[in-house]
Image (cartoon, rainbow, N blue to C red; front, top):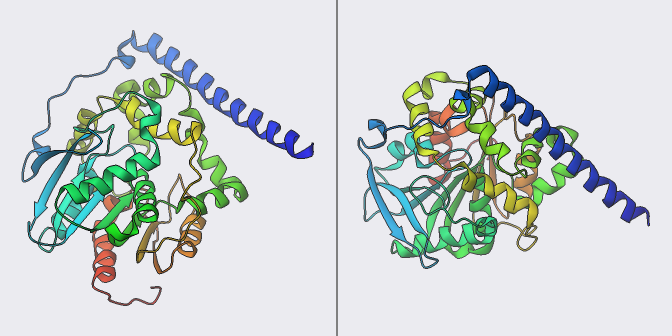
Length: 339
């Protein structure tokens, strides 16, 4: 009986938190609508920024699932494959510093995940479950003619990269994850850390319908500016325009959170990650506490952990040179003191 009451109390607390933030957002949107005469809630049409076209080779591939995946390709076609998987709210362009750095040694493919950018956007929430996202990644590798790849993921791209490595270890030459915990580690940290629970408020907020999309897009994506990189020179106004142009459909991106919360997957969550793994972590992450990184390393057969002091959650854009150097060391088996 105490266990039942505890679960009921937890469920009520989570629902209360969800509705609390949705109520705040509703009044904020109403206030902005009144103050702006409705302009704050209007979506601004944009032309594709020239920056997204210059020096990038855009391609599409239809996966066995029927998903038509958009990706950017660079590098040496005959070289080993390196696949880069973005998170939320991002798209292939968040890897621009890494694409340029690794294209002389790898066939680099930076994808738009399903629901993002130029890739298909299924309408059902259940079509964004982790098993399907991991299968997209595995299908992509094989459809491109490879048996395996170096896989790099950040944020939700890290979630997919972890899930892919747990389900299809034979398809992963090396795994590199940036500011995203192993799924088993995150569950344990979330249950123990009040700070992580406070950081995760938006995951509950995103369970509401329509209000999250309207809030994110309000005032021409005002809140994105509040969550930007620490090194502003690495994210120009032109870069922001590229983001705003690409996010013409927020619902499919937010459905990742809805599916994960409403239809949780336990399969493959707690297993050890077999491929050799590098975890890179910016320790000024306002969404994930650093304990996630330390516990994630313990969930791997062979893991290296590299902390980047002062870097934000968007570590590969905040500190591209450091991130690229750590990946180089890892791929070339160079040793550092904390490897």
